[in-house]
Image 1 (tube, rainbow, N blue to C red):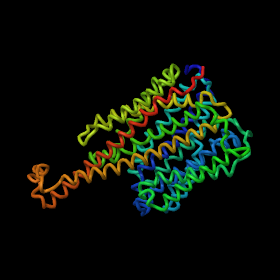
Image 2 (cartoon, rainbow, N blue to C red):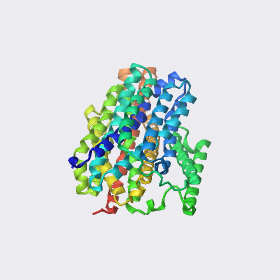
Image 3 (cartoon, one colour):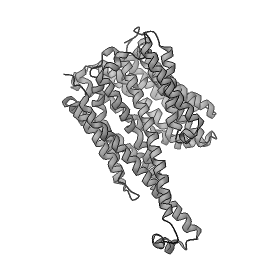
Image 4 (spheres, rainbow, N blue to C red):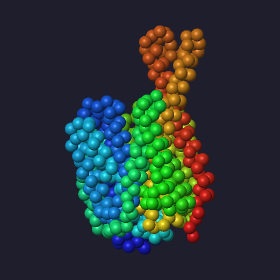
Length: 495
């Protein structure tokens, strides 16, 4: 099948792969350098968190513009403009001398880079015949996997050797190189087909998405609805989304074409995209603090273990294309169930977890994700009209991004609350009136009133309670894919 690809199609694959890698490297490398930024710019933990939050909000809020921009500017202008703007904003982030300046450039970076991912997937689906979609999406997925692997690795290395600013500066050569095949491979496709821009609809959905993103990103930190900020964000999200639906039903040219949501496969597909977003980054959020705090692993070892998810993705690429051509529904269900098994395996780990258990469970979870993503995309767009592909991919990417934010927040709630409950229960068992649980501790660290014994007992209770919180979060990660797997039967197969 690969021999049937034309040179122009190979160039198109190279173009979207490089652009996707550029986006993934930039997004994931920032998380590694936040401690350095915090010290360099004299920021608090809450302030430095805005570096990630505002970028996500800007990306999510501007993603719905992708379809209209593509029809106004054409593929080449939009992709080259997004890549160059994204790269320039990254360099500007590295030159920032204050937290406020850095936040402004991070917002600009997120807004300018928003079209890169949905446009890449839309271009693949449009440039290749439907029979080539499984193979083309699989090969494009290599770029999607490389970003989250290379970003933390090179970002952390560059920051350690040089400075946090160079983690932003290193994007410059990647961005310039990515522009070359983009200029050569793409043309003015879709240019001049723009409908009248629905400004009211865009403002409403942008505010709703931004408020929802802020709500889930900052809710746990601000104690949810005990904070006036969270109450306001919730009211804005619900109110603006409601008015967006009303406006879309009444407008003559709404922001999203109603025909997009009349396609059953696409509606099911974006529901699965939401769930796959939930599953994509949650292990990457949970495992680093678990391994560093409870097991004492150094950052380099943690990075290698988390990178095993990428290795699992790569291994899935060996079989996902032929399996998707054979039966995309079964392949999607298998990928979801493999992720459920891997997460259930994570849920039975304990304080004595071995290196190989963490490695193989992460590899298996990454394998399941890679096995599910290609058939999910093929099924979602298999019956959608070609003119709706770009807009559909923007919606698809938006739901996947929101799924990640939402589920990370939910798992953190589960972790924090179950850890607190476990801490209270375990602490209640430590009493001088029942010394059976303390005999070995007293023998080693002194009597019950000794400061060393009190500190060691408190630290051990904290660690055990935290482990219970992580286990419950992993169990939630296992339940979600297992519950949605049977829904694959509702997809229509295109023959």
